[in-house]
Image (cartoon, rainbow, N blue to C red; front, side):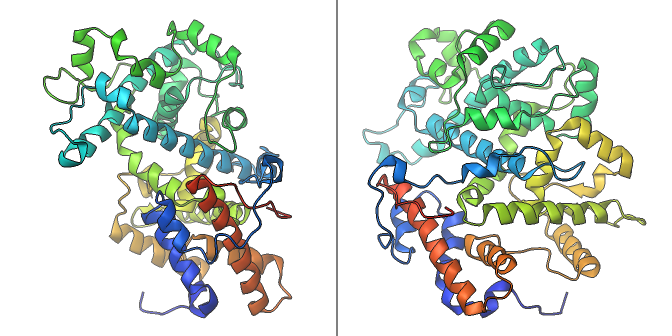
Length: 441
């Protein structure tokens, strides 16, 4: 559209530098602690915590207090937040797989020079370890899936390992396809157990850990003794020469990726690999550790409702509508409750062909996004694509809270709060003691 509209940043000169830092380091360079720190206004301006008890817990545990949705057919804020936790846990697992020296031996990743830095293909070949890991995860998932008979909800003591959960999550994202497949097994009423997943993920380290009962349950269901796939694959001496060749990255290799299997309508292996780019984008956005987490998720739920109204409008849209990342998060969370999602589709006669997910290869159809943006503005008279960095989101949250406060005061509150959260994140990345917790942090 040709009309120029004011953006949240147009009048925020005091925050411009921080906004730029957030845009760069929340998306493009999330793993570099030194680079992150240089954009903090002053990472040492907040007093250091003298003990672990004095350190802040981010995200705030209160975020996960209620898993009951405020509206029928919508996920709760807590469920969306745990979904972000789940993404982080998978990315942490992926990082461990890629960096593991032991897995280099199991998957036969051989350095082709005396020094790793001289081998230009070394890092690229190491990343392929994730593909081999996912292949084994799919095989383990299939054993769990065929053994899953009861429609009873999963609990902390019946959760499967993270790799199996990851594959199941990918399967669930297929919407009506998953519903049809799971109906045949009479397990279509089983939702992703977000509350149990939240209990399994350590809020500080992000590590996913099963209870002893869950370990035993998985072993009895599948006959798989080793529930920790990373630990199992790291013991390369436990595999025969033929088994190692079947997993090898460097030649000679007999690796064959898992294909489609009877009873499952998609190639789950390819889908897990394809969704990797989207998962990394979501994790690198750092919403989970943002000072505006609750506001971001609350607004995402509101925007998802508007998006669904456009999708189910009469007459229907002329082209597919692309979801933004915040709407996509809500949508994917709802897909993890297949019965609720199916009822929503039936009630609104939703044509899934008109809904274009923002989760394939991390690439967005530009023409479809332009159409969605224009249609959104025509209906709601507001911008569709918004900056979701910490500063912009915290500014929106602050203006919602402090309606009678002057803009300069709001900007100052936002600036201090964002600086504090960034100082906490910087300290975590650098392995330093965290700043002392503040009221409301």
